[in-house]
Length: 491
Ligand code: ADP
Ligand code: GLC
Image (cartoon, rainbow, N blue to C red; front, side, top):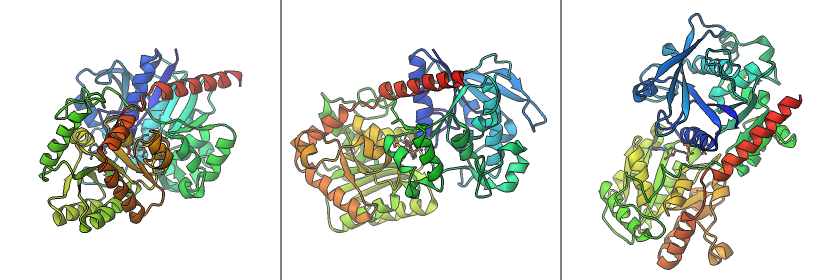
């Protein structure tokens, strides 16, 4: 049994902007089920305080650079027995809006201060400097919002082993040099082999430089971030860590209870591999939901996404527009929110093809499940994708993922062509070039296969039998925790 402090800035179902929240719940739940004492630590956002019924203050902690002590609130992650610790600093976290910015979009001006405070609190709990009287063996940090924590404790005796998981290298927490001074961070951390990145303060580098080990969320992304194209200037450092054996790609798992077409309460008709014909009721339901003609022969493409360039939304819009102009028998159902330009482009597409395209701009857990169940094909033409969870949900729902060959998408989908199709290994569709033409071509390929229902059904069943539970991946983390702990004890 290991004591693990799992630090994250979002945790489903309390606060979520993307897959980080899903993983920050499902991985700790899997580790807890394996007998580990895992506690999740996150900021006490207003949404969390409102959603949790039983909370109690269990400690106060005086942090360097802050006048008043910060409270640590304890509760339990809804739907589980996992303990959560909330860092309660009302001036930083108890406000209307999202985790990183106002509902109207953009980032909060004080994000550097917010997540520096959070990281300091994580470090204090990791070093057992609070009344909790609980010291973890492992501090597992996630993404830049937690990056300063490993840096703050790196030199301390009796510290836990530290691991930093990159969920997305595109978001680094980069701030002007003056911010370093304003945050009152220790001078010793300011150098090019520290938090400094081309004269800027990088929270991400805190995690990359000072953790005992770095992981990222798929093997292919672990290779990609060591290259110029995906490394954002950090590829040299990451390649060095890889050479030292200190960078590993571990593919994410999914929560099989949350995402189970057999029991999913949000969808019209439950189904499993044995009753896969019932999936069709969900197709009718989603066509009706979006006011599209109910047609069994139209291939329904689903899209659920943060609307940002990473996700290739522009490629989707261009490719679908071309294919609809050509009269292809398809429908597109989308749910997403993000950059105003993409939201507007999707609305325009809907206005141009009102009986072919359905669009909901916003965030809805329920509708996301309904799209997963109702679509025939799920689109993820991402320019890069550290892991991606929606293609994993799609596999489980027999909704064939159509993905770009990158990151976790490359690792989890087998293209329906050639020998893989012939020998029944195929689970979806894949393409290489990040262009609307390559996507169009692949969408056409999927429409052609759809006309062969027996083959299609075979691919669906293959997709549904893929195991992306946490079983294997959580074991990889456990082995890593053990080896880091042993290494730290030796030094
Ligand atoms: P990322 O973390 O880069 O956004 P992932 O595929 O890992 O991508 O995870 C996205 C998660 O967020 C999935 O659980 C997906 O269903 C969810 N999601 C994204 N946009 C929405 C939305 N508009 N409404 C509901 N869920 C959404
Ligand atoms: C990030 C990535 C996504 C990944 C998720 C969870 O948001 O963009 O690919 O699945 O984190 O690890």
